[in-house]
Each structure stands twice: as structure tokens, then as C-alpha cells.
Length: 390
Ligand code: NAD
Ligand code: MG
Image 1 (cartoon, protein in one colour):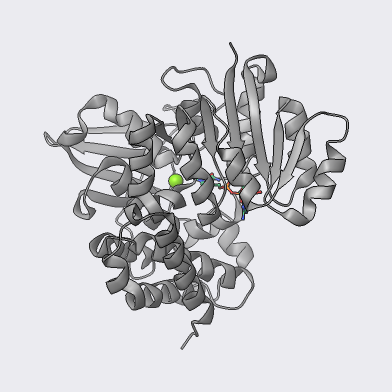
Image 2 (image 1 turned 90 degrees about the vertical axis):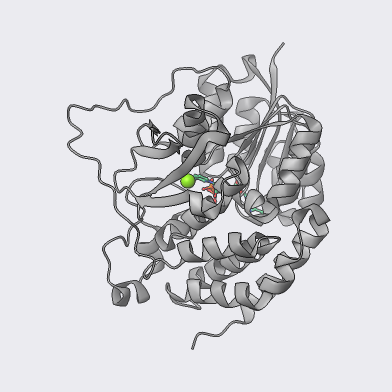
């Protein structure tokens, strides 16, 4: 029996790597691919659907449905479009699903995946940040196994083989520090979009690359770690590790530290999740310890990178503060990308929105349901769009 799989966000950076690994591991001979999805790059989406012999291709962008139908003419592959279609496609029962849509747009489909998939490979960290309790409760009810794809959380997941979750004393998340690690605040204030996108180690999508430059990505990951491994804010430490070789570590209560190391290549974490609970050889570079002269670690500068402080504030507020934080961050990012606000304004915007909504958000929970989450998402986004730099 072939294994049934779907890939949401297949045309993105994580999605393309996932397609590559599926093909490398036998493609349609081994995997019965149900769904692939994208948004704007219809040509690529159609190519992937054909290569994997998928049943269905979905574009989030309804205006591109005609183009998708034309690109798939004669293949027998069903083409659909829009957010409802994405949600319906996520209800298709599969053995393994990759959730790799970027941003909170991934939340509704991810929740459907959690209801039906045997294994949910989760790259879309935003859904855990916005609605962690709801996703976890849904998985617990359906029996869906959640395997983290974010490299740090995948590392911690692997390091958990060395002890029990209840014996964790600290989780140490590594951060590359991004392209502005050694920049002055003045330089950062004037950083351009191109400079913010130029990540030194990882080749990623545009939005997560900029989030790495502000360290908002690490802030999301602190909240993600709290959701996945049931650790408090004080048990999560971030260290800057510019080589991105140690992907993260667990310190157990006897102060023994278990780390996971590998080359900085997302195919490592994606392949781990794809083959879990087995392991398979992957097309990633082997580490050469003879030539690796050093591994550096340093405490991050929270004055230049306030996102980390804001992540702890989110955990302190609790409730739906994560949904507010993520939406404010997404609107700040949109405004930076469009040239409307400066690089350092992003954190100022997020902090203002978070403080404006903290009382209300703290009294709610994602267990109140998806609509509650979406209401905070919309409110925070609107506030973010209207925020004015001083
Ligand atoms: P990307 O921008 O390269 O790709 C995003 C995918 O989502 C594309 O397929 C795109 O078509 C689709 N998409 C965009 N907007 C959409 C919308 N409104 N509705 C539905 N689909 C939409 O992003 P990426 O870098 O591959 O990241 C995907 C997810 O994985 C993010 O949540 C990111 O935080 C996470 N992640 C990425 C990396 C990485 O190395 N790229 C590492 C860890 C975690
Ligand atoms: Mg990561």
C-alpha cells in the first residue's frame, strides 16, 4: 500500500524541499499524493502536481484558477481555488501531511489536518503561536502525531530521546543572529529590505528571512517551544550561535545537555519528519568535525532585538496574546516590505498593539475556538495597519 500524503504550501521554500525529498524517496511509486497547494506560482504548482501525480492542486488565489485549470488540462488532476477550497482539501484523509503555508493563513487548514492526518509535519509555526491549545487538543482527540519541522523544535524533539519531558530543566534554542548580528542600532534603523532578506546561513522564504533579521522568528519559536514541550518562559533560553550547526539543546534536571547537530539545511528536519519514526539517508552535507574549527555561543542583545523580550511578555499575558503578537508582527512585516515603516519600527508596532490588547487577550484562550482567534487576529492587524511611527 502506498503512503497517502499531502503538501500544503508546496510551492514555498519548505514545500519545494518536501517535494524534492518525496521524489528522491520514490515519488508516485511510494507515495499516493492527494493534495499540493500554492498561491501565486501556478506554473510551479502544476509542475509539482504532475511530477507527483497528485489528485488535486489548490491555489489560494481565486483569480488564478483559470490559469491552473489550463496548466493541468488533460492530466486528470482536479484544480480548485480559494480559502474554502484549501480548507476542504485539508480534510482529505492522509497518512502524512506537511503544513507549510506561511503565516496565519495556515491556521484553518492546519486545524483540519490535525483532525484527519496520522502524522502532521508542522512547519507553520504561526498556527501553534496563534492557537496552540486548540491544535494540541485537536491532535489529542484525533490521535494525530505532531512532528515539528522547525529545525530547532525538530532538534528538541530528537533530543527528547535522551530523557523524559518532565525532567527537562531548560530548553536552549539556538539562533543564528541573522544578517544584523553585529550592526549598530543606527545601521539597523536604516536597513533595507534586501539587507534584511540576506540570511547568512539558511535559504528560506522572504517573510521568515526578515523575521530572522528582527529575531521575531526566534520569538515565535520561543512560544512554539512553550506550546510543544510544555516548558515555562523561564525554562526557555535563546543563545546566538552564528554557525547554525547546533540546532537546539535540552538540559535535563541533572544538568546533562543533549544537543542535535547537522548542517544548516531544512531537508534534514523535513526528512526527519517524513521518515519518522524511522530514519533514511538524506541529501544533506555531512558534518566534518576535523575542519569545523569552532562553535560559538553568545547571549542575544535584547536592546537591539526586542522581539525576544516581547515573546516572554506574550507568555506572561497568556490566553490569546500569541494570536495578537503574530498578527501584529505580520502587519509590521507587510508595512516594512512595502517600505512604509523602518526596520526598527516593526518591534515598536508589535509592542504597542500587544499592550493595547493584552487585557482582553489574556482573558481568552484558543480553546474558545477558531473564531475567537481570528477576531484577535483581525483586530491586531487593523491596529498594526493604523500604527504611526513617532
Ligand atoms: P514561502 O513564502 O517560501 O512559502 C509559503 C507557501 O505558502 C507557498 O506555497 C505559498 O504559495 C503559500 N501561501 C502564501 N500565502 C498564502 C495564503 N494566503 N494562503 C495559502 N497559501 C499561501 O515560506 P517558507 O519559508 O516555505 O515557510 C513556510 C512555513 O514554514 C512558515 O510558517 C515558516 O515560518 C515555516 N518555516 C520555514 C523555514 C524555512 O527554512 N523556509 C524554516 C522553519 C519554519
Ligand atoms: Mg527555526
